Length: 231
Image 1 (spheres, helix red, strand yellow):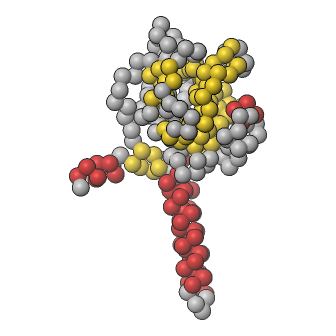
Image 2 (cartoon, helix red, strand yellow):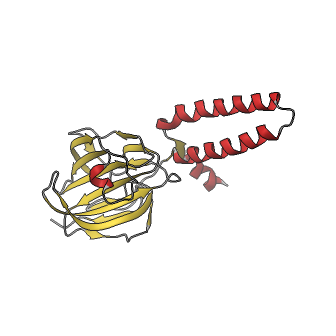
Image 3 (cartoon, helix red, strand yellow):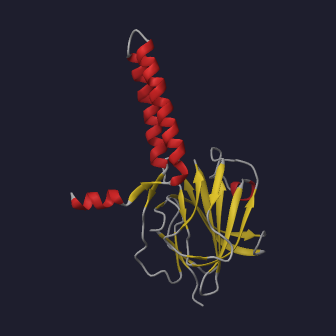
């Protein structure tokens, strides 16, 4: 019982969802009350509350903000920036910043995943760049280049440059990025938040040792997705 209580204390609701959850619950309960009082039979109110409260519980799960700490050695480690599933592991030509080939690992977040994002590496934020774009389904390859996105470039203590890209999806309409240029950043800290289904790409130097496989589930700030090359 004590262990279960400690785990519950490590889970909280992300501040990005507080207003949404409170206002929507009040509206749902008010409409349910009106239906309950206005209808001769109570089943319309019961059906309405069952459906809307189920949807509200899904959104509540989406806005969970678990408190996590990475227990391993962070030297050269790249941890998953998000909960989700690995949908891309491939070498790509990154022509926006690097103008060379990079190893890209992409994690897709469904509606049922926590949508808080963590810094994948320790280091210093070089710049943050937000680009407007389309809202294709996040798992499509073109989403990385054509969708609305926010790019965060991080330089590690060893001199490696790692690009973390938050990508909006077909349902996502807001990307929140907490990273600030010239600030130090660390694994365990939140990089940002993406509302509704979306994706995060991590661009790594060639020669990085990938530790995940296609289709593997990841836990943000816990799953090691790669190790950077030795310098």
